[in-house]
Amino acid sequence: MAKMLYEGKAKKIYETENPNEILVYYKDDATALNGLKKGTIIDKGIMNNTITTFFFDLLGKNGIPHHQIKKLSDREALCKKVHIIPIEVVTRNIAAGSLAKKMGVEEGLILKRPLVEFYYKSDELGDPMINADYAVSFDFGTDEQVNTIKTYALKINEILKTFLLERKVRLVDFKLEFGVDAEGNVILADEITPDTSRLWDKDTNEKLDKDRFRRDLGGVEDAYQEIIKRLTGK
Ligand code: TMP
Image (tube, rainbow, N blue to C red):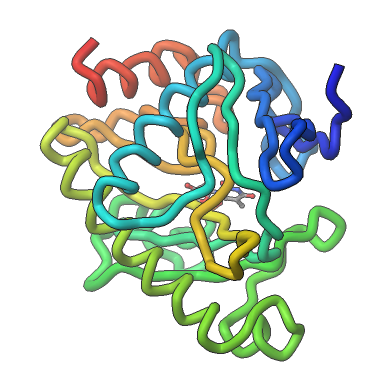
């Protein structure tokens, strides 16, 4: 059995025979409230591997470099090994979640333009919000790398927003992580799934994402399946 390099809340990372490649294994575990709420979403790992693969393929075709090499099985994907930049990059089109609370607005307020936020990836500190200056001052990346991350986030937003709207899904917000590969390039990493995004039905605003788990709304698995159906037509 290959050596496990890291276990996160939703995925395990294993080494492979190639030092520049890792194996990502998607789990069914679900957490919310920075790990305080724990549970399982049946077959989430399988669904999230499918969804991430779909989105990364779409983004790759549209010129966004990313870490995924190929899907290996239901729950496994082969990816390039990167040094993860410890920033959670959240891009928002519509106010929801922590933004709606912070700004005292109703969920659903359409933002005048997409908003990109940076959070320092630290469970101990509860992922505090930072900005580009923090990222450079704390040596998470160079000015150029941080600018690249923001540029990619906005480009990814346009690609996904347009694609999803054609499938009657509103891209409310989503979280990305980036890494630096062996050649020193900043590339998209981690996952893009209903765990890490808010996806609402275009006509009814029904939530088709992890907020169903976070807020005990029920129908979590069905919502993830519905996203797969809308993406693939299957
Ligand atoms: P927020 O409204 O709670 O700040 O979340 C914004 C988006 O980022 C939402 O789609 C969920 C995602 N997200 C994560 O993927 N991981 C996290 O740790 C947090 C706080 C949010």
